[in-house]
Length: 160
Length: 106
Length: 364
Image 1 (cartoon, rainbow over the protein chains, first blue to last red):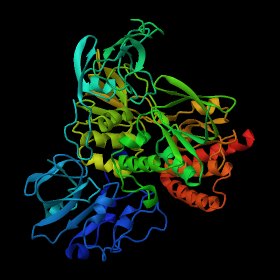
Image 2 (cartoon, rainbow over the protein chains, first blue to last red; image 1 turned 30 degrees about the vertical axis):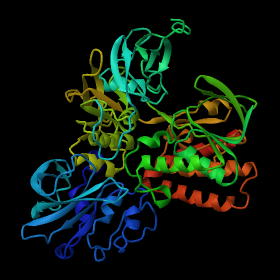
Image 3 (tube, rainbow over the protein chains, first blue to last red; image 1 turned 180 degrees about the vertical axis):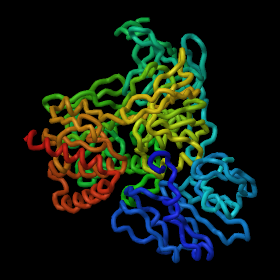
Image 4 (cartoon, rainbow over the protein chains, first blue to last red; image 1 turned 120 degrees about the vertical axis):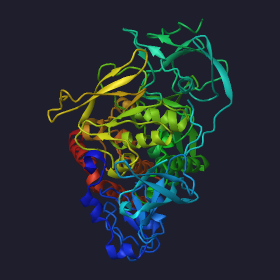
């Protein structure tokens, strides 16, 4: 699926998902990087040791979920735009999902937009909670979306 | 059509200038390639092929392929994709191969 | 006649780095660029680069071009000649140049050829219609000149260039109804593929374009599935109404100067076509002529930069510059290059280079 259509399989997605217990404790990064390419800025961007050192720059990133606090600094550092933050503790039935965004218009905080899954299909309305820049010299935005909890691991983009 | 807003880039364009394309006045930005100005104005046919007179546009846009050769101020075989636009330029579609000297003297 | 210690032709990622590394060793460098600006095709790369800190990871290509160009222009040991095209190499080691209609000649002691590559074309009925453009051409129009290529643009080729240009088309506000790839697999980094896919662009692998339609310019294309025998599968034809079709089916090195100079060449499909046989330090079979970047084999910009450093250091060494620091700097660059090529995505490059090295003995 990934190499034929650009969509990772359920198995691949499950393999990078933090444990239920970790997700229950608050925001955490999920790295949807499934192919060995020479790239390691996620590791250098995180100052908390959330990424384990690369033995080879071609390794897949490996995380220490206990050290990750879901700050999202790695989102703007990832050239593949493959890192997302999920916070399942936001409310009873909603979760927060942070995604990278490099398109216009940049949605307004408080607006409602369509949440898209990994195939680009609209699966639920989501609310834009926060919009922030990924850094002074970085034109990537980081959007924090309020999504229905059942879609926290499916919504990875928006259609505004 | 020109990009008005872009999420990553800002475009610093030259001043607006007027040139002619096959006799008609067209507006472009000074210093941008002729082919870019024509494309922004919706003009995509830049030349015709030598044998079958088929319409040709640009191909590589960086001066490699010669698909965009045009007559500019009477001079044939100017690579329109890299030649900077100047105020008052006379730009014409070229028919087939432009003979050397064919246009220079008018 | 104009003279220089090291002449570098082309100011893309390889040429810029070659200039800085050669001048850094103390050599006097002349950098020739046919465009009015430095940076080559880096100037239109709006995405963040992969790699490591040393390869400017997470920086956007055009920013890397800005930074390196500034460094080059400010370097007292580098003379920059923009708007200048290298036309030919002559037997006595002279290179002829053209600038603004004027012809001059220059004689370097060492020459680094970093001329890059050109986009491949694809043959199908009406493939010459205006509106059918190289993907890189569309990138230039859009990201350098700020002009939209069209309203609806289909992409042929799901390699890194095809997929990333599709993403950039979306960023510019253009609709992209499909990326069409003949191979059964996506060639681009999968993270690139996933980012266009989640924006709703379908990627059709095992598909090809059958024909284009239009009178004066492109109006629509017919695509179809292709079977394991590489033939179109009857009944799977689909029409896409598009005003632009981008072709991204690989690059071919711009090797004219290498052929003129009499460098031994070998045909290595994995590296994009004819490639000059060269040593580990990127010296061709003609002493004091070096290659780096895409002209020496189609690869990524990150590796082009490291190759540029190696060629610059080695050309300077040949002229007696940087004898003490050479071994350490070369080893560091080699490590970087090995890092970039060691993984599964470097397999094609590795096998191409291995094949190329088998031509070395023949050339000697």
